[in-house]
Image (cartoon, rainbow, N blue to C red; front, top):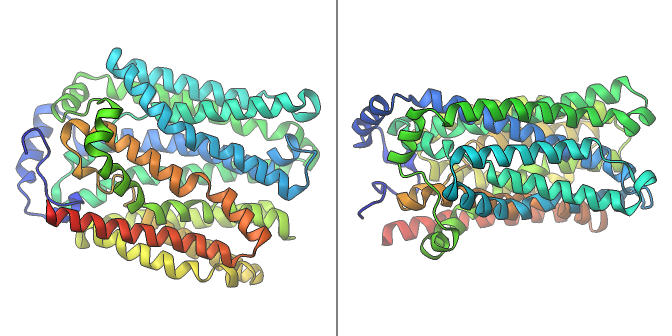
Length: 449
């Protein structure tokens, strides 16, 4: 097909080590003077800063916001209210992507990234300085929701195309390896955020922590966003990167036109990684809320356990790159979806199994998350015609987060509190089933095409 990336099936890693892309890779790298390792640095910097900001808000939704902004509700209801506001960012994210793509078409990539990251920083700082419910009443809740929406819009606009550029310029026999690099930002961001909260909770009284201590986590998030802004702008504004992005046709396309022509790929791509995205919050945010509500365990110690789990997740992400390059990304994701389905059956036994059972759930869950999440990004973006790949990859990621993870803490806590942990198992199992169905459909459509 003229004007498209050479088609080799759904996952670039399936192409094999002797693909014709090996020669193209060498030429592009020499011509653009940009090596995949250099692109990977930009991807890791951008993702790590975003995930740190993400987890700071997520952990605060469990440990801070129910008491600070919903003191009129019981603990469970306050947590559910906090998770409702938490989900607003995922609803706003695709809106931000579409709006900022238009800004990039009208002005430039630099203007878009600057505005998006300034909005992200301003929203994060706004939360840090936001008066609590006792001082501002219901207006505090309204402002918290507005700032959360601002974070979601900004994250949609922060898409820089570097993950797609990395995938297109990686050697054909190492695409699984390079695909996992950006995913390392998730465990890194979680470890930093959880460590900061754990330290503050251990050093401060509960009153001081809820009154002012938690705000320091958002100050740090704001500072990291500023550093990441300059690092990413310095990267993508160089002539070498601009030339390489243009050569790969990684430019924004109209969202309506893209969905009309490539909507099938967006939907399949989002559902293909649904099991991994659902598991994402079921081992990070949900168990933390469950422990804080229904267990006598120290929250600070439980955060330390989750940090250990995040280290295992990082190892799993690295291993996923090696596995995917040997077996192919479709096979890797399908196998992990089956394992997640099996793991879902263990949730009631482990979470109700005391400290030992909970420890096994966290450590095994994080390890499984790393293996699956390492290859979840851009699962079927090779299906997109080249002129739609930039916008298509961004919207696929947005939809995957929305349907897979955006409401996961809210749904899981509501189901567990009202119907039992077995229903959380069914929720995760449904995500694994959707992933397997999407992968099967994508394979069938590949053969048909």
